[in-house]
Length: 150
Image 1 (cartoon, helix red, strand yellow):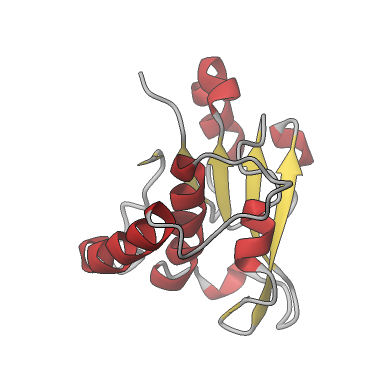
Image 2 (cartoon, rainbow, N blue to C red):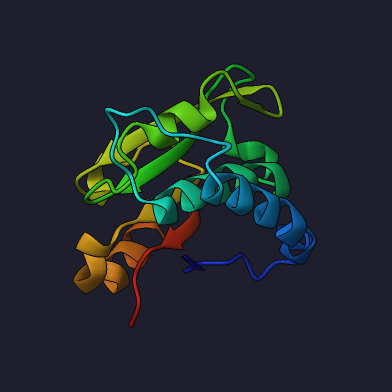
């Protein structure tokens, strides 16, 4: 999973290297079956770990105050294109908050659908559209993360 659009302004992103131990523990718990996915949800371990990464990004990135129009506005993780997470990402963030904002998952078919989103996961199905997607969301306070290998 690669960050496609990191902010170049200082102070916007905390040091993600410090998260490696956390991600390692989450990956190990998933690998050894301590954290399980319900039987009806067939999701690969890869996407279980990536869901944990997306959630952890919410804890270690700071968004500008103008990102939210009010204190109760949800913090949104959006998925653009095919959803590889199924219900697992929703279950991962259920009842979680980010700086007092309830955490929600939104699925989008196009960039025109994106209204208020803080983290946007761009799935492999959008691999031919990355340049257009980044152009469409340019200037918005969105951390863009991709599942695309060039």
